[in-house]
Length: 169
Image 1 (cartoon, helix red, strand yellow):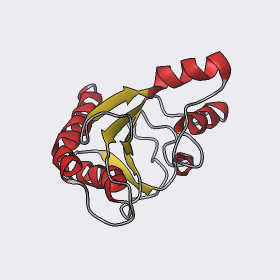
Image 2: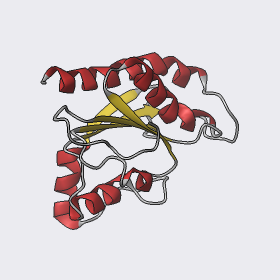
Image 3: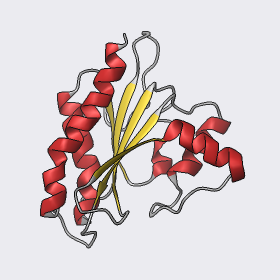
């Protein structure tokens, strides 16, 4: 079902996972890798495929109850460190204050994509970003050792998020 819009209708919660990144830039490939592993292990989770840009979410996350995005980050933390940020309230508050967003390595930031989805009435109910601290973003394939070691932990965090949503049914 990769890359297709979120299905609607049967009343069950809609859970979506997506990996942002490029597998040909070493640690930047962790997002799509973790998303694919989650989709293989978690029940009732739709993997909308690897995404190069946050803008690719439009039309694919519409109507979702929970969207979990996995991406490599550079925050200064130790490589392989995993951080979870629930963006729904945080982005709404930031956009209400001044309409600005934080800088992004992608062409259009996640905050701006979320704002656009809000404006057209298609924003998901909840968006959680799982950021994994990367160290090597040079051209090439394969994850650095610290980032590769974080993969199973990131998968576990994401599956727990989805199990929490699906347990409410």
